[in-house]
Length: 285
Image 1 (tube, one colour):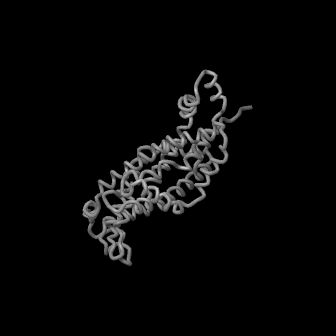
Image 2: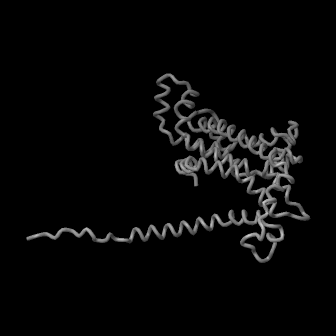
Image 3: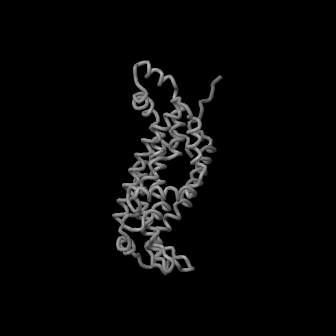
């Protein structure tokens, strides 16, 4: 009795491949929908103001207006405001990483009197809209004589209740045996924090840096309240000055918005793998 050899030309089931094809189609459609506003903004920034405000939408400008981008630098001290935004963002991100990691470690790993009460007070900040303590912040900055200065812009963003909560959660997830082993080796509390615990929460630190960067770069209300001189404003507040009650040149506003978004977009493209890994490992959605 002979057994027939399996045919080499037997076709494999195409079910999984078809399912994958539909998944890719859905993802491509979703990407197109998400990218359309950004592409439309680019097209409108190269159009005339009449074409932007036209009832009939123009899919492409009759004549590309490259001068809209150069006009941004005439209407705004763009490079000065860009420098202000970069300085404010860098200082705030570094300060939040320093203060929030120290506070998060203290709340997660140390025992002191009133810890629960202090932690509750810090977390209660997350339940209060930022507009509520805008006036007290303004009065403090005014009494310090920092209105209209870079220090006055930076000061309220040096600490973050969200960052403290995020760092506390990251430290709580680490096994306590690591800390005990370091103490048995003679390490003091700061050495345990710096050499043992802090390197293990790098993904969470990346998430804190990302959120602090986006929050600081896009902040609008506080810079508008504290500063009146356009040269002292960051880009977020400078863009708001392009809109007035009489006339609005929409292509200029759109071009300025694209230029203001470009640094953050380039930073994300360069660090996208670290950003995605940090968000995935921290569980932040």
